[in-house]
Amino acid sequence: MNINEKYKKEVVKAMKEKYGYTNDLAVPKITKVVLNVGVGKTKEDAKSIETVQNTLKRISGQKPIITKAKKSISAFKVREGMTVGAKVTIRGNKMNDFLTKLVNISLPRVRDFRGLNKKSVDGQGNLNIGFKEHIAFPEIKSDEVERIHGLEIAITTTAKNEEEGLELFTLLGFPFKKDNK
Image 1: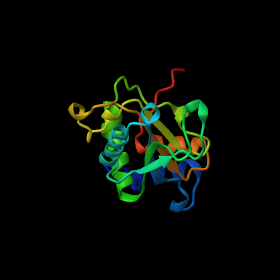
Image 2 (image 1 turned 180 degrees about the vertical axis):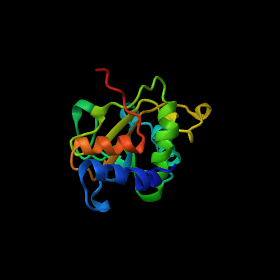
Image 3 (image 1 turned 90 degrees about the vertical axis):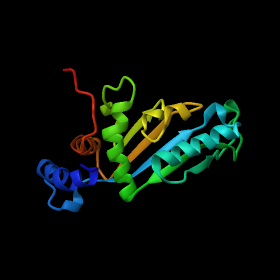
Image 4 (image 1 turned 60 degrees about the vertical axis):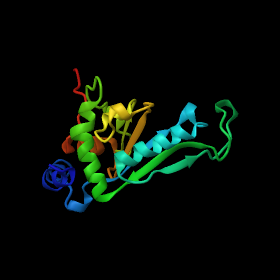
């Protein structure tokens, strides 16, 4: 089942019962997903930046934006205007398709995956997930990969607090670690 269908059929009803919302539109929902990759040590290598761009393009289905340094920081050997990474913002149907793929295919493919940490949900109800290896996504063929790089996914919601955000993600089927109490 698609994340959007699950949200409309199950999540809205459950959230209205638990939190006493009177209107369907008051129920928290996911507004956008941002995929971000920092190039780090390989910032001078144009090929690595191109590889990161191609990876993000394959995973998201959209062309990534190159992010540049706003300030010079001598400790990190970064000059103003230098390329420091790439990012993609996904909304709408592409976002729903991406989240369905993330929950059902990509997260289970992560090596030694035991579930997402509940502390990954911040005070505004947004979820941040970090991948050490980008090869967990089905679009990336491991035999074509030259360099493995990390990937950050920030999922933004309209939730008012951490508890509502955690409940929303749990009802949508995101696999969180079980408490050992």
